[in-house]
Length: 501
Image (cartoon, rainbow, N blue to C red; front, side, top):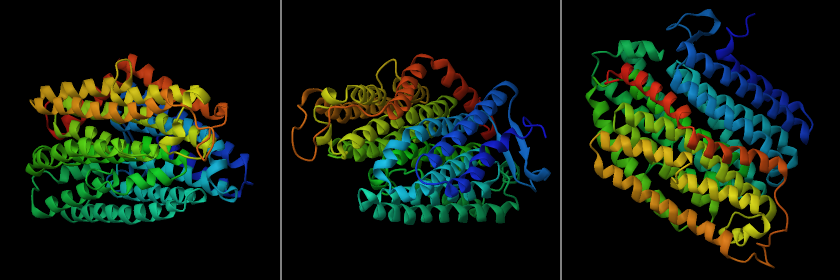
């Protein structure tokens, strides 16, 4: 068997086959090392896929040799190759990082289950990204969601509120998935197919109420999944009470994949010939993106819990991604794809830094960060550099995201959106600066529950965290890497949708 020919299916087959084996391993190091091995192998497969697509163009893989549209197709172009690389890359650093954090936050008897669920979650996210079949998107979406509910609930060892957070997410996630699958059902009724490329062909000229309703159900369902304002209320508690390693992984991947699904349906399945697509850009994504940027940022400003603050920040950053999409231009779509990638790097590093503090102090309250620079300087500067990236300081990926968004806003004639992007960045400066002030200028607590030991986090956590911090700077300087790929991906998607390349 030619391994290269089977490359598109390897990122799904490897982790899904490894997950059940994890449950058979004894608790302790073995499940962790097994999960790490397969996260690295999956990352290697995604790198190979990315290189192949970048060099030769889109790849189509028919499962079981059943030709599409009858069979399930995995279809990889530059847009989802970039997201595949992102999800597997984040997994390859979060999995090694997780061991010490999981030791503290998850019951030892549950560690094989934990790493098995983490592998399944990664498989689901990669499957959503890679598949060219609309119903397969729903299946993989539920695979990732069900494992995520379990992972969040495992945080109950430290805080029982993890159970209610997981249950709330389960309820909201199920409602979102139900809306999504009803939308798919309506499209299937209208076209008789579920293959995305074939759906696009069959939908031509079908601007009827069934198709309009299907689109609306898909938009609302995925809006819930990606925590689009004001459907975001499940996210803050889920990120706050989940084990820290789970929060770092989900914040960097799950909502990004959901945004990708919105992009795929807007630009590959539907197109600009449908009047409701233009209406969705103008009257849904644009106002809700702007509202999310400010409402979530203002709430973040007043949080006393740093994980919750960063969770609300994620809702605001999703607003940026949706804002870029709403411009319906190559520049706007490029900005969204760039920010999907860049935000994963900055938010992953920030939540990793919080996990290091939790390991040493047992708390993610802002009071636990007092005087952190004197006790944990390496962690402190990782948080500050990643925070500067979130704000959008030059030489970081955050600046590149803001630059692309500002350019897209002015090119599209939405000059007011450009000023609002800068204004919301100033709010990010305020809440990141608030934590930085506590870390740098306050004295560490000498007694009470927020006392910090005079030692850094272990190297097994510091090295993966600083890999992401370094990536924040590297991709902030080498802008051609992400920018050029995102531009090529955006042009291809815009051509599919019938817009100007």
